[in-house]
Length: 149
Image 1 (spheres, rainbow, N blue to C red):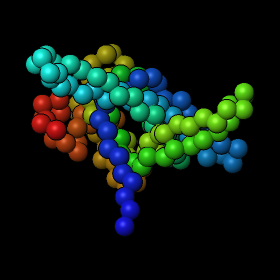
Image 2 (image 1 turned 30 degrees about the vertical axis):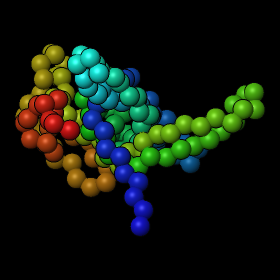
Image 3 (image 1 turned 120 degrees about the horizontal axis):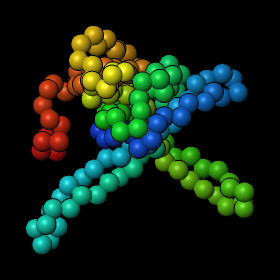
């Protein structure tokens, strides 16, 4: 039995970038910053940030590129994948990325006038999910930063 599943909650580090493969498949890439707070040996609180490269495909890629922007808080679920390639100097390079199966916005999407939207969220179901208008459909109304894990 094997399992390759990753779940992260963090903030987009930049706007998603969408392109199409030669066969017409949509692919969107973006980064997510995940913060971790801990006490060091002296008892002082420290914060460290881990950056994740995220890739979304097909309809999920299109909706992600359309609805998400830098700074938005998101939940991403998927699998980890490592790719390799040769750079211009012939050196072998590697990158590990999270291939998304679910992307859910956790904060309300701002309206044109700057106020957050609160009503009219559409439930998204299935393998390709994005629900940018809903602040936290999957997690209730609790403050996620206060969770003990």
